[in-house]
Length: 305
Image 1 (cartoon, one colour):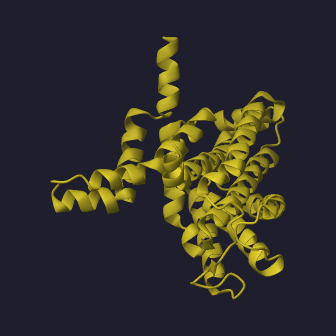
Image 2 (cartoon, one colour):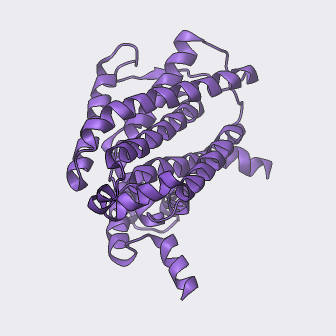
C-alpha cells in the first residue's frame, strides 16, 4: 500500500485538485455564465505561491513549518484572484453565451502573455525550486482533501441559500429573474468571483506540488479540459464537476498505460499517449449529444423513474 501511495500519490492529489477546479468552473455556470477564465486565475495563484516562497519568504525543501506559509499563500491568492475576478467580471459578464466564453479566453491569453514577458514570473522559463513542505507527494493530501471537502460543502450549502436560488433563477431565465427584482449583475459577478478565488487557491497547492511554475499552467487547452470536467460529469449538480475532475484528471494516465500494452500498433499507441485533447474533444461532443446534462444527472433521473 505504501509503495502504491508513493508511486501514485501525485496523481491522487491532482485528481482531487482537478475536482476543485471543476467546482471553480461550475460556480459561474450556476448563474448560466460559460466562463473559461479559471486557468488564468489558477495560474495566477501558482505564481503568487512561487514568488512568495522563493523570493519573499524563502524556505527550505521538506520543512513542515512551511505549511503555515502555504496556507497564508492560499488566503492571499484567494483574496487577490477574487479582487481581479471583480475587476474582470464587471465588464465581461455583460456578455452572454459564446461571446462571454471568447472574452474569458482572451483574459487567459492576456494573463499568459504578461507572465511570459515579466521578470518577476521568470518569463518563458518560469519559476523553479518552489519549496515542497512534504517529502512525498501523498503528503499533499493534507491540503487537497480539506480544500475539496470545504469547497464541496460550500457549493452544496450555497445552492440551498437565497443566493443559490437567485443564481439558479438567473441560469433558467435571466430576463424573468431580473423582472422579479433579482440583481442579476451582482449575482453573476459574485459567482464569477467565488470561482476565481477557488481556482487561485488550487494553484497555490499545485505550485508547491509541482516544484516549478510557468505559463504552460494557464492556457486555452486547460480551459477545454476544465470544461470537460463539468459538461461530462454534470452541469446541474455540484457533484458532477467533482466526478468529472477526478475521472478526467486520471484519464491521461490511464490512456498512457493503455498505450504501453504490448502488441498495439504504433499509431494507436501514439494516439493513446499523445491524443489527450482529441479524446477530450470527442468526449465533449459525445456528451453534448447523448448526455446533455452530464452523466451524473442522467443517473439521478433514471433512479427516480
